[in-house]
Length: 390
Image 1 (cartoon, rainbow, N blue to C red):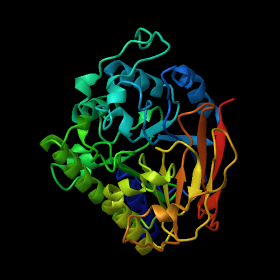
Image 2: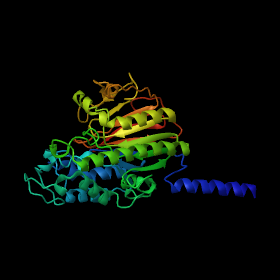
Image 3: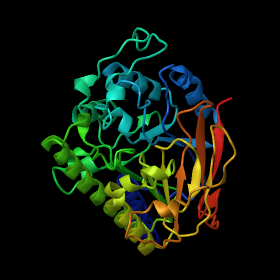
Image 4: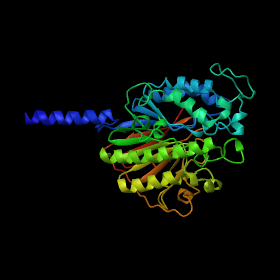
C-alpha cells in the first residue's frame, strides 16, 4: 500500500508539472532555432521557405523549433496578406514551433523605409505588383500591427504553432495584472529539465523608444505601449526564474529578438539604455540561479557566441554571411550601459544567423547529463551547430 501511495503521489506530481508546461524528461533533446527569416524585397528567401522548413523537418533529431522574430526585413511593408502567408508557412512544420515577435513585423512598421516598402519580385501568395509601394497595415501603427501578429500567431494562449504537442504557459494565462495578460506572446515551458522562456523585446529601437513616424516627440500611445510592455517583460523574466527555481530546472534558456549588446556596430552602443532593465534582471537572477543560463537572440543577423555579462570572456562572430566564426573585433561586454558592471560566469549568449542567403538554422542540443565549460560551441547541458540550407 505504501509503495502504491508513493507511486500515486509521484504520478500526480508529474501530471501537475506537465500541466504547467513542465516535463520530467531526462532524455537528450534537439531544437532548431531560427530568426530574421525570410528576408528581402527580392522574395528569394520567402520562396525558399518550404524547402527551409522541410530541411528542419527532415532532421530526425529535432523535436521542436523556435523563431526569435523578424518575419521580414526592415525595408518591406507590414501587410496582413504577408503575415497570413508566413502563418501558412508555419503550418508546414511537422513539429511544434514557438515564435516571439521581432521589431520588423510590428514596432518598426511606422518607419519610412517600411512604409515605402516595395518588392522587386512577385509571388502568387502575395500578389503585389513589382516596384510598387505597398500600403502598410493600419498606416504602420505599431500597436495595431502587434495586435494583427497576435491574432494570427497567438490566437489560443498556451498553444504553439506548427504541428506536434508542446504545452506552454502564456502570460495571458498567468499574468499578475490585466495589463500583463495582454502579452499572450510571452510563454514558458520545460524541456529535458530546462526552463525555456520567450519575451517580446524589439531590437534596433532602444526597446521601442525610437519616436514613431520620426515625429518630434512620442505620442501618448507610444509611451503607454513602452511602459506596459517593459513592465510585463520584467515581470515575466522574474516569474520565469522563479519557476526555474520551483521546478529545480537544470538551466534556463531565454529567447528574444533584440540584440541588447549590439553585436553589429560600435555606434549603436549609446542606444542601449532602454534594454538595461532587462539586462539587470537577467544578470541578477542568473547569478542567483547559479546554473547555466543561455540567451538566444536574432536582430543583428550574423552568428555570434559570447558572454556579454563577463569582462574578458571569449567571443566568436561570423564576419560575413556563411563564414566561419572567428574572434570578435569588439568586446560585447563594452556594450553594457555606462555605469553598469556585471560578473556573471554562468551566462552565455548566441546570435542566430539571419537575413542573408544561404539560409541557416541553429541546431541546439540539450543533454541533461552534460556539463560543458562556457565555450564557443557548448555550455552546461547545451551544445550547438550551424546548419545551412543546401
